[in-house]
Image (cartoon, rainbow, N blue to C red; front, side, top):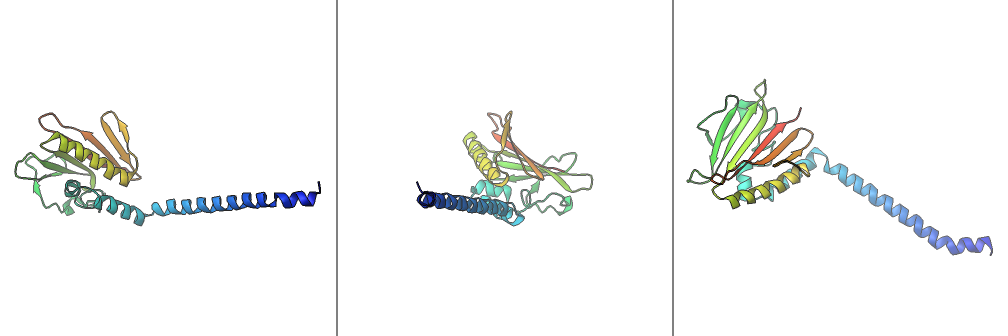
Length: 193
């Protein structure tokens, strides 16, 4: 067989392999660029807003908005600047400030919000204790929070009866703290140094 003839017969196969390699590399480069764009502060902010917009009305009422860590409060914010528009809780923690937001007139459906300060009186922790009258409502809200937090922080992991999410500066722990008489969940947001 003539070597020149063999080369021309294999040329279409060779050209096809080269084309596939070029296309594959181009697709990988596009994927890498898309992943890099998803990690910019602006894209994270947009993703958080989208997750909040798609959440349930009750979750939106509890979280208040997509700004800050939660309830539009940011890490390092001075405790005196927290703009809660709900009443102070009947009992206050020894350190920090606690508020209660009721969802109706029964006093059975509410969230207690506690802000914890660091040594400079800046927010370093936020605890939400959410209690609802019906266990099914708590289960639904738990599913909603898992989806919401997953969209913001990525996949969480289970540890005992808790689910934990982390990013570069925040850890969130969701835990069922209810009893048969008082169904509820707790969310603990902690600043990671």
